[in-house]
Amino acid sequence: MSMEIRPLDDRYAVSPQITPEDIPAIAAAGFTTVIDNRPDAEIPPELHAETLRPALEAAGITLVVNPVVGGALTMENVEAQRAGMKAAGQDGAGGKVLAYCASGNRSSIVWALALAGQRPTDELIAAGTQYGYQVAQFRDLIDKLAARA
Image 1 (cartoon, rainbow, N blue to C red):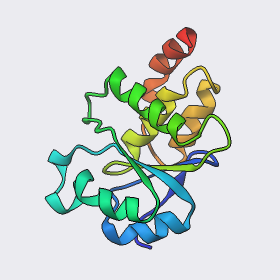
Image 2: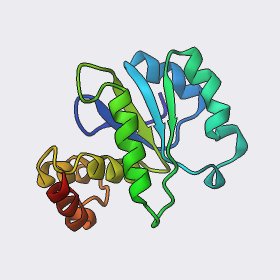
Image 3: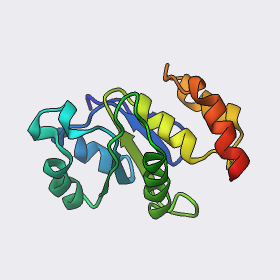
């Protein structure tokens, strides 16, 4: 498998851009939901979400499309990520989620924001930082969201 799956916890992992060739390995790894955090404008048409959807669904994987524009993350993105994770059963005994973007950075940040208040901020930051993701710069926002949770 050419792609790198980077687990942030036991049920959520991130990776750089996936390709159709990666889908059998994603299914074999037990992922039941894939969240696409990469806007189609960043990639060639053969990697667009709706191009990948038929192969993912044929492998029994649900695709959630939640494009996060670099430097322009919105609260709608956070809510959509949380909803995708919840639909996958992340709040219970459900399946595993693989989220991807260009490097995995945006997918790790939006995950941390979606879980603000459900886990300690330091734990959320450390999960992404172990892979070099820039989650720490969102500490204040994670804490603000946690205070509202």
